[in-house]
Image 1 (cartoon, rainbow, N blue to C red):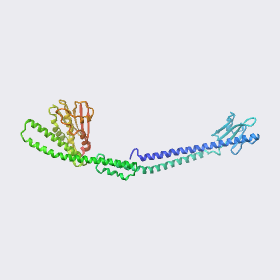
Image 2: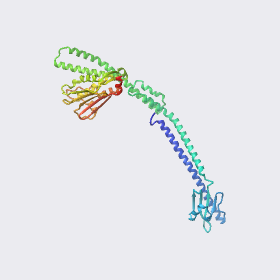
Image 3: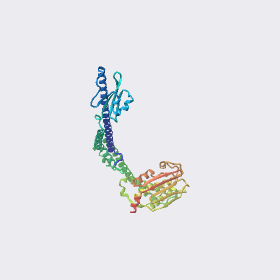
Image 4: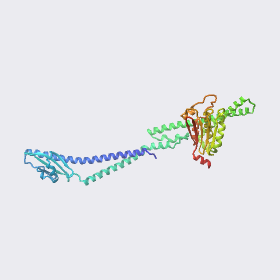
Length: 435
């Protein structure tokens, strides 16, 4: 399931440790056997030579060392054929080993006059033969393999027992949907089932954190929904009062003030609708319907066109396609309306045009910036100055949140001379709408 599983790491660690330990022990055992053989033979030859030297000091005619595998020579000519050429070179006193011939030789100068003495041990019948060494190595390899397999089995058992709580906790956390947390999601961890150890502490901490997050989300939804409903009452009163005043004969200045009040009321109603959209994010399926993007965009532009009054700016609208979506038309209108409002607000006087393009999978809005801005967040944070300032609507952060909840994508590119905002959607939304 995981590329770097903890359980696989435990198995690998146990297997590698057992293999290294077995190989090291096997080679150590084999080397110890070989070295022990050589040291015993060398010790026997030295003892035989020391015994002869001690006996010859008492009896010059003492017998030379001789046994079933040890023979002594005075004349190099009498040595085994393989050693004659070597002895002709008058080797110094010492101990010599001839592995190929399987002979061990001790050389010493004894007697009066002093003559070299060669004590030769034929170890061909004592040391392990090549076939015996092969069997020994095979046995060591078998033992190492069995130890490795046993270590892997033990590692699998320990890994399953020790890492199972971690796997269970990881699965429980992975099953949560961070985009749609409900009030009961924190209960899925079941932290009380974990032991009182490090994993249990982690589970309980995550559970407490999720509990706080879920409670905060629930409070936010309740507040958003309650605030939206509370604002509807004064809005209804204001709209009714505006409708009554529109029927009266008003002066020119009063009519302009009444128009501003009406637009502010529409903006406030849009804000309330936005809050309701966000508070209903857990039940978006109840607010899905088919809607045409083009007419909705045209209606939003007309609603915000008053922001271009006295700016001498043209708006170019291109309908390259006629997409139909399945989703939340009110949320879509709020997002597009906020982008259009920002474009109208941020385009300086006599600088245009503002280009708006409706494609098959996106709506793009481009406008001259007239400012040296490199950071997209600066657009939502900067406050306009002067009598024409009308606010920034819901802010680009709210647009991103609406797009996130409805499966749309919002991108913003800010250059030195142009701001390009895009709201796009996937092919699945178009296909569902077309169906």
